Image 1 (tube, rainbow, N blue to C red):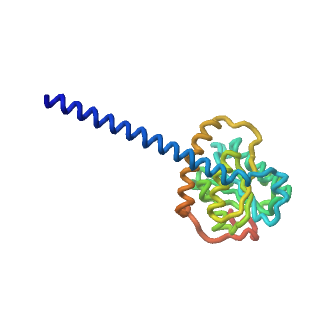
Image 2: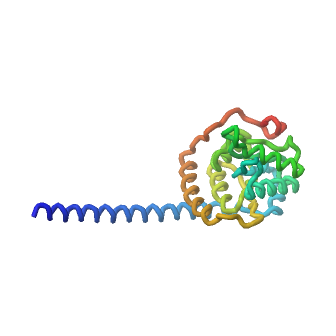
Image 3: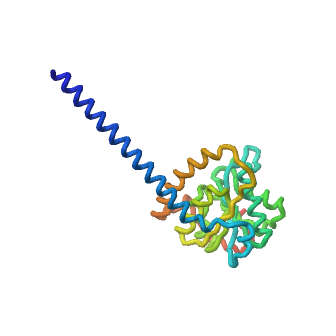
Length: 231
């Protein structure tokens, strides 16, 4: 009798536990999707075309966001297209300077050097390209664009799915920002990136809410200087 009673209690306990866990997971999923929509809605109007970008006055710089560099040091397709769009905007007069912001946290991995070299090969003078070596995340890249380089009005370049988050971050940090998509082609694995981006948007909403400090800050660098000071 005692054993049967214990089994019933255990069954009720685990039934209640799994029901609560399911409700909690469901609620978290709904909350994540709601936050995702907030980010999408907040940034949608600031995604513009190349021709529109060239009509804006007083843009301090173009911020090209980094991503994967291959083992041989060459930019991945996604990164190459971001650089290409950044150069196109620069050449069209959208802004006088470019910040290449990416991950250079290890001696054997350097996104910003690959970005700058590629832009120079495309015809941009070295002195107009600034390297942000500590752009370890989208949030940190945008934060440092303002706090280190003093940029108040920027054009951000990345693939469209990524721009929503970058623009939301910029708005939260008090930066006037516009985004130009660099989707010149279809990228392998895009569905998984879109799903991961929902989680990344939720994470960065919290970062913006609490104004999290980036991994590194450092001394200010004027965009009026020669970009080679960031070498």
